[in-house]
Length: 385
Ligand code: NAI
Image 1 (cartoon, rainbow, N blue to C red):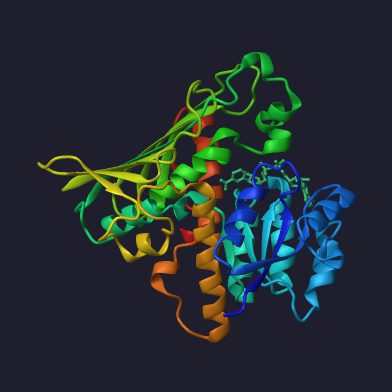
Image 2: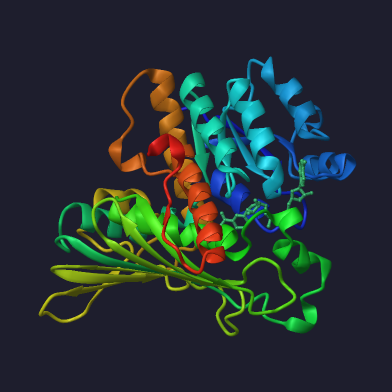
């Protein structure tokens, strides 16, 4: 099987998320890192691209140069990852989809709901894949959770409780640091800060594991550091398409919490609990029985979990390997399209443009509800109402 060619925009030297993408895309030998426009400073991007092993003519200075350089090559990239700051996602993703490339876009996919709808339409019209990097859904045991819920192990799901609460912006003395301040400034961050940055991961995961969409929500948003215009903490109640009740807490002022993404699902017949900082164990509480600890890599797990686990049981797998599962899904999806066959259902789990759009609608609903003292809002994008 020949490798697919992969390109990246953003993710330059010193960036937060670039290395996890390069590790994830490279892990299974499915993609060759073939092209990139890695930095907002053209020379720094070209230089870093060459140091990472790109051919000099494919280490581009900016994304438009990359689009021009790649579009007519016979060995052009099969997939482009967009890992630039949020406000640029829409323009870059749109341009690459229009030119016929498959795209994996970082979250949030867009800044507005209207842009999100445009990307969904474009992806459908062009027949190109537009995935969104809710990479934590790549963890093997998150996929197993989803499989357990889908096959009815918990019965009807009554309640899903999600958290993404960390403490990295809790220092009031540091709140004016320009690297922190922009996140809470509407002119640069949009209508929401913490929910748009972290809360959407937790909300998407609630949908992913339950197989249900968020329909309505009510939010209490707060700026715990008073100088902030946008929220640094939010508590969101929501209702899902299958009747499940949702609770979500997100915060950036929860001192002592590091990453802080957790998900719990409670059904008629049992409960499940998983935490991103302890991703190799899934806690399963069947009604009336004792607590069971499910280990990643053990025998008898779902096909979805087996497909997304690589290292022997007892050795930790972490976030870059979760990202690698998104890339593994995408390689299968790209090949299935090229060969005109159906995708392996255990691989059809990568988050899609529709998920990115639903998140944007939820962001706006949270902002509106927060302003209106928790008034319930329709959380669905207009095109899905
Ligand atoms: P960062 O600020 O650490 O790095 C951004 C990189 O993009 C830099 O190398 C910069 O030079 C480059 N860049 C900026 N504008 C560019 C342009 N026009 N063309 C080419 N390169 C450009 O940002 P970070 O934290 O890596 O975040 C990037 C994106 O990834 C954001 O949208 C963020 O929300 C998302 N993210 C997603 C995570 C996830 O778990 N899925 C986790 C962290 C970030």
